[in-house]
Figure 1 (tube, rainbow, N blue to C red):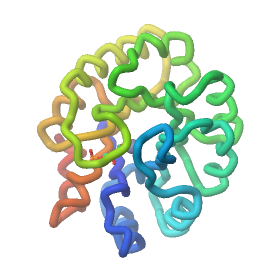
Figure 2: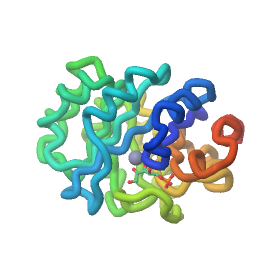
Figure 3: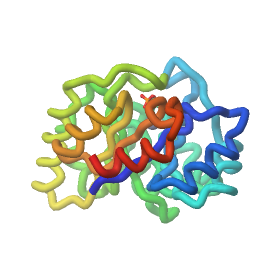
Figure 4: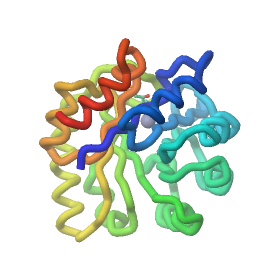
Amino acid sequence: MKLVAPSILAADFNKLGEEIEMLNRSETDFVHCDVMDGVFVPNISFGIPVIQAVNKISRKPLDVHLMIVNPEKYIQDFYNAGASILTVHYEACTHLHRTVQQIKSFGMKASVCLNPHTSVALLEDIIQDLDMVLLMSVNPGFGGQTFIENTYRKVSALKELIQRNNSKALIEVDGGVNFEVGKKLYEAGADILVAGSFVFGSDNPVDIISKLKSL
Ligand code: DX5
Ligand code: ZN
């Protein structure tokens, strides 16, 4: 699958409504929303009220990436705000299995994210329960960073793990994506590319989104 999830972290917040309208007109598959708490990651972004506002005008499903500690406390809140896919970090969940089941109990797609140093092998006993795995290809916290090359190897290893376990999980990759990186990621087995600055920093984001889908 070749799906694209633009990250609104790189959008112009002075005209967030217009940015969402632009995504509505584009071939965007999911709107990627990066929630940061200043504890799990060294940055603070936006939270529930902003996601609620985005959901009011977005015709695309919301892919909510929680970079927060204790994400299990807020599952219902993000469901109410409009999340379709809810991603929690492996590194932030002591009782990951329970958290994944809670996400699914609301009818949301459950996804787990791995930091660059976290091995995909650690998903062996949860992969069958997951709808998606999000691989960080930069250290989470900031947009506009350089892609970490080791991610290609992780995508291949994750694909093998998914197939071996008959899992339906899709593979999403987040951070430093551009045309060159995106092409190699799709070739390695990625299904969904997140792109922030590459999309919103462009003069023609609709065209960039379309081209990312046909790499
Ligand atoms: C980083 C976020 C990413 C970020 C990607 O912590 O999870 O979604 O917005 O931005 P780019 O595409 O600019 O690397
Ligand atoms: Zn993200």
